[in-house]
Length: 117
Image 1: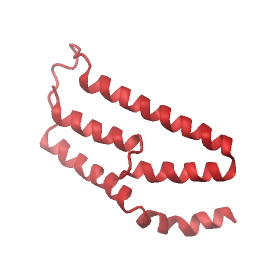
Image 2: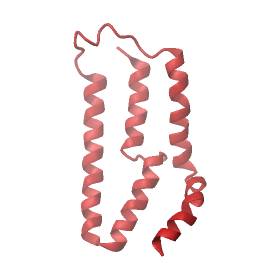
Image 3: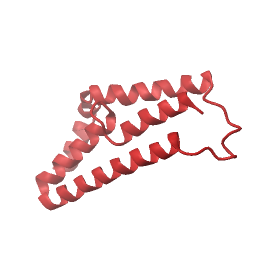
Image 4: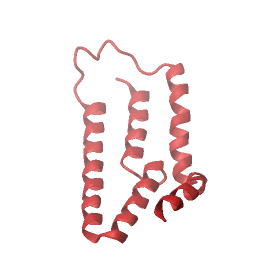
């Protein structure tokens, strides 16, 4: 069993399926609001894609963390301290960008406004 890797994998999966407080949530919310503003049917279709992606992410995480161990995986151990020390900054960036998205959106607003004109 790999409890540390499983926990890291679950956190990253929750970030991938756009749980509020993660960086993906902000991006998907902006995409969804833009799609609804332009075309209601495309907005509903994008919402369906977001929901199906979330269901698949949770299903995949469940199979990877709680599934059966194969003979190929038994020989591997959990994450080392070095691997964990490289993953924690990534997780912190995902959470910080989800809590304070204005730091990124303010920097790209000039570029995006130039594309929209």
